[in-house]
Length: 447
Image (cartoon, rainbow, N blue to C red; front, side, top):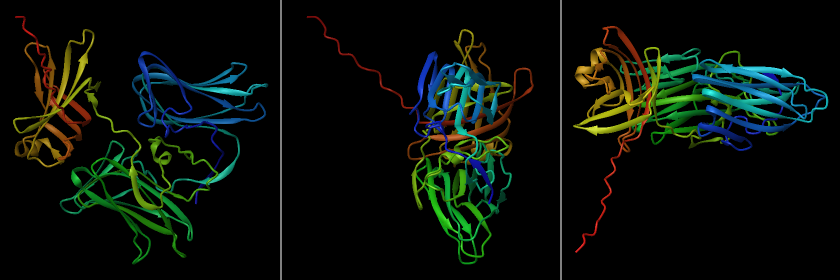
């Protein structure tokens, strides 16, 4: 089993599992600092900081994961106290989750430091912060390769029987109607492991996570929820003589999974910090592992967020206004973004689908007529009003018939005003829009 040296993390709540606890926050309007998704996300100008006790007799390794969108800029800074000397990791340019590691020796006379996470523009995301003294004890690393699907299908075998589907997108895996994924995992006989998986079962779907250990020995966890993300955990003890098992995840109907983790049962006194990885991936996988060994599900800690965002050609799109409403037996999922500098104009993307169409994955070029699906791009306040409809591409959505929320992805192409093909990519998650009745004001007429 692979191991690496790791010591206790001096950063309190460095994975933001407890939101803003232990962090002091300041922001300059309209900037803000948000912890609701169990990351620290700084939009515009803002700062989150924490004071930490250190010694000038030791060297320290500092590591963190960052993600930048909307041309963000910021930094992670260590300010040694009381000298005020600084060590800075500068962050610029859009990038996916990236691991940063630096080693520092404090100045003589140092008694503490202030760790500062700073944003200056755009959106700067921080997660999995660690500050450790060099050296330490040995803890196990993650056994499931690419369990957060940051590298799409790498290390996974996808099984797609007739009528089923398996897709990898947005750092998630979707397995529908009997589709499954599997991976062989090297294990140690007699060792107990903790297993964790995040799963979403749209439209009342369900599936299973199964461990093929030996003939007649296939423990499984049923993944069945209410349509939102849930976390399922279990423990697994390997019998004597078994050095390899196969993990299989199957979508019996509709199933979306993420953050699969299998690690040897931890020693309680050791912080379970993220092991070093040479590739970039989303840091949530190993931070969110829970200790329940009875395969009970617990509500996923990440807050449900409604959004409609992506790109139109080479330009970013992030909706300022979102709607999901029913009109004439069609559902309209809509995102509208203000257009600078006056912001009186709006760019609007609409996904239109009938109430009779089942959730799933569709190709516009062959399914749009039969299922009456459409993706439309408009610019409001231009005369005449331009509206362009996608002619090819993929749409995928899950509509919850209980509360009429919808989540999905669009990857489509349309012809613009110059007769050039334009690619539109969007991710969305929307509640049903409810119309408020106007308030009636009773006036008293004078006699």
